[in-house]
Length: 78
Image (cartoon, rainbow, N blue to C red; front, top):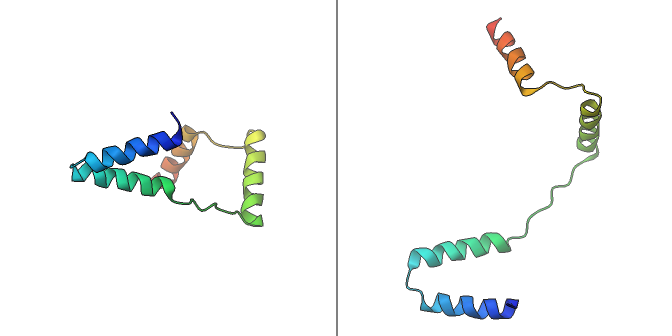
């Protein structure tokens, strides 16, 4: 089915519907779908930090979740 056919069918169903809640949800969904998402741009410092973190992971220089939780527990008990 082509996009134009889908649009026509949707318009027809919307015109026939008396369900206010459904129409409001459909409207909300379309607004979310049509919003332009802003692309987040990283600055040089952020890019550098990410590159450093990737290098640390590549070299095995990281803690597992369990290890991190264990360190936190040790810090809190002191």
